[in-house]
Amino acid sequence: QLQLVESGGGLVQPGGSLRLSCAASGFTLDYYAIGWFRQAPGKEREGVSCISSSGGSTNYADSVKGRFTISGDNAKNTVYLQMNSLKPEDTAVYYCARYGISWCPSSRRAYEYDYWGQGTQVTVSS
Image (cartoon, rainbow, N blue to C red; front, top):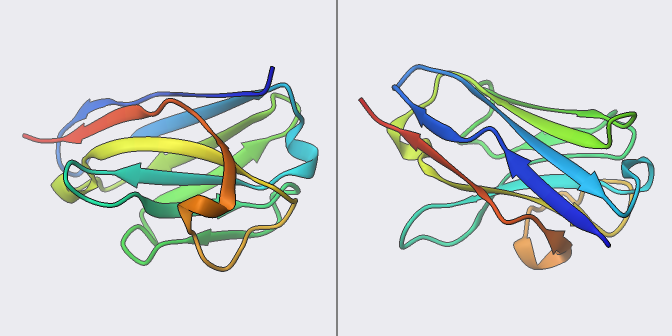
């Protein structure tokens, strides 16, 4: 059964760091790009980052560029999102999702991704 499971969320103070994990099962990351999205209450789901199947290509939303880093470990079938210098506006439920092919689209539209995890809450607050 194809599944994506996020973990690593929590409560952190502004300026702090968290590392989110997205563990995939039922398929191999060798053939699919993975994206991270987030959704704050009352807002639309926002594309945060994407990594190609090889890990050689990544992209980021302007709002997180320079603070977040996406990486992958295909041997563990897991993608990570390292989040540094966190701000209160980063508070959201974070989701990982599978894109249907190995490279990342230039856009980060949620409807282009076919399988989703259940999400993990990130709260940035003092």
